[in-house]
Length: 430
Image (cartoon, rainbow, N blue to C red; front, side, top):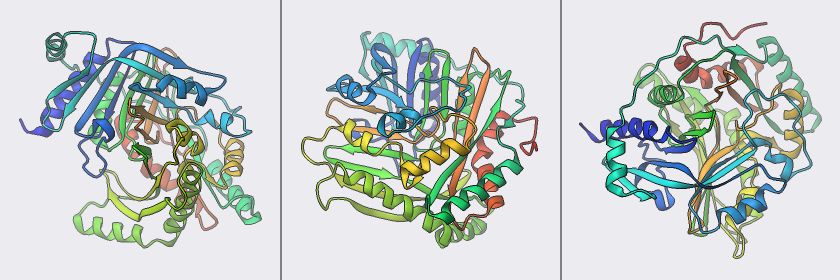
């Protein structure tokens, strides 16, 4: 058995073992070397945090409470998109079928890692190491396939086209320069096994910032390719994604599509606007002159798509906490648009559902003050008792956007999830 096979088997055992608890999170790099799990977990392919010593969930002052909660602790959790309402004078009134809280963090009883050779490492536990390793070794992952789901789109094809035209009119008037417009796909009466679905999704679409999050009867099943923010010491890194194209069926077609994405002026324009927004966000907490773009228009291959990714770095000013860095950059510019507040106001107007955990962030803090958070995209949200499943996809709308091309890009981004769900119904439901 090679290392990849060992890590895949370890992943299944960890998920099976963690599922005995009401709350657990798996942070999964899928062994993708360009974006390994970093900070104190840098040498690990997988990190599982399970069961609860303490937790925070919902708050009237979420960021200040989070700062106190994570101080000198290993803490895992998520930030929902609608925390925007605590950062700016905004509201969220659209319906929400999944029902994740706006924020959840927990101090785990157990932290178990898998290194790049596929070996288990117990980083924290109130159990004897030999006992816990024996428990994990006895876990057998049982795949539970689901019946094909009838996936529906919340916004019809014609509604989507009309909305993009109206958003472009706002751009023409100067209200915004760019807006990330998302649409929800959903299934009712959805009966899936979340663990099996995660294994299938990470097999079909392995990504460097994947994660699985169980919060009692609600589940996040994520194949995210995007990092929101990483902090190591005083160094902060953001890696916004703007620019997507499908993969080819041959190496020659792959190379052609990669060059097409790299040289596409519209995709470059989208990327630059968001890079400038990220630079501005990081400058609020950075030492003077320390914000730098260390990579612009990097083209990264994933199983389903090529992505254009840029990297922005800064050095944090003395006296600024990690939570302040996150708050002053939240929500991430790649999922809002520019100017950020105006774009978020229009997102609320044109989207049909509350984003909730979608386009939020999942990650962890360490006792040293380091952190690493993804962007919750390419992800399934599942409310098990309601049997409601949701996933959203979107893209940046600019003045040069072609509405039909934007719709088709959404379908490219949805392809892996659609494949896993094995949909029965089409999405063009006018």
